[in-house]
Length: 117
Image (cartoon, rainbow, N blue to C red):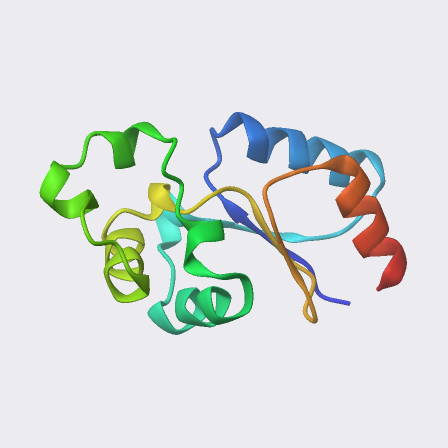
């Protein structure tokens, strides 16, 4: 099974997920949005699977600093464009298990998902 963890290297939640995976000796590739960006097709696929609302990090400073006009009338197309332009607006981490993706980090959910795969 090929596992990829998507996020930003200095994000505290990403760090927690990496420590959790490393402590269980689970091999994974790390994809840093800041350095490698994110492919539009991948982000759109995640939105179809998980919903753009689950992926858009409205609590982060990048989103909060947006002009009000950019926050108004959000829909999937607009949210994807914002996340592509500013990948730090994507909730982190996204754990890609191949058949399933998880947004955020909760040890119990990671454990259950990895046990099922």
